[in-house]
Length: 389
Picture: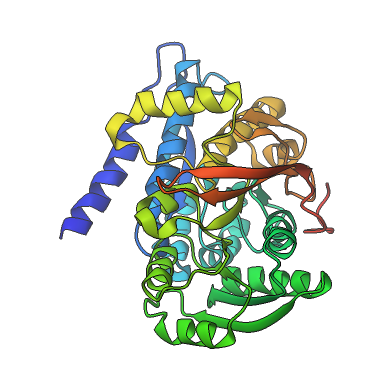
């Protein structure tokens, strides 16, 4: 009952947070649909995603909206999975009749939703890092793919930690397997060896048998790729309880989730396109605005929530370039615009994906991330060659 009430409260708060149209704006709002995992695996990080959308919409509405119309927010729980996503997307597209879909989701949810997006011909900005090569003329991606995220961790472990053997652990679905398939290929390409590769269902919580195999294999480093949120928490807690002290690279942990883990997260290496410590005027202004709006209720901005904020602004720029909200015009414009945000300038012009500055970092005792090295303007590589640009 407590969870049901809290979920209902979050949905109500998201709707209520949309700033009412001022007298200078037309009454008819532009509807932004945010399907996101308020329940299930992504429930740890989803509230921060909703907050990012709320701030962007509030800022834009305070300055007159888009084409003289206010933005409104429609949030739907996709339960972090395929069945929930089908219901959430169907509701947003065909009942709420949103003008655009902007959100991070599990790969299972995204894959289940794409046919609905295509049927409704609604622009969809996917703001979650993922395993790559998911292509649709209706979808743009402003988050990282393996080609951008994996090499910094593997190279660091190989060169700085002298790791020659690796053990891989993942959630058994598209993201977990896709990320680790790329990781294994990259490890072998660069002269390393994978001595174990194990998976647990996305809703699984007992990692004990896999951790036993990890210990028996005695690798030089561990790399994991689980569903964002809850599986990260359970796996890391059990690794620490088992005394595993290997160099540990997590391909799915975000800064917000790391903070929620407490001391268990200390020492984890991650590779991200956003960390709160980015020293730029745009990021400092963003963090100040988030703190001002949400105060004590603020969820830590992270690599899954900040792309949401930037994507709302990307949609605004595309609509203004197109001069209308009509889907085909907006979809064309999304490939031609760039947005300056907390992560810097982002343009989804590489086969519907974006070049990104990546940061190799390590989680500290307070849950913050210490940046070890940055990698500017890393290409997304070949993702969707049949989509132009």
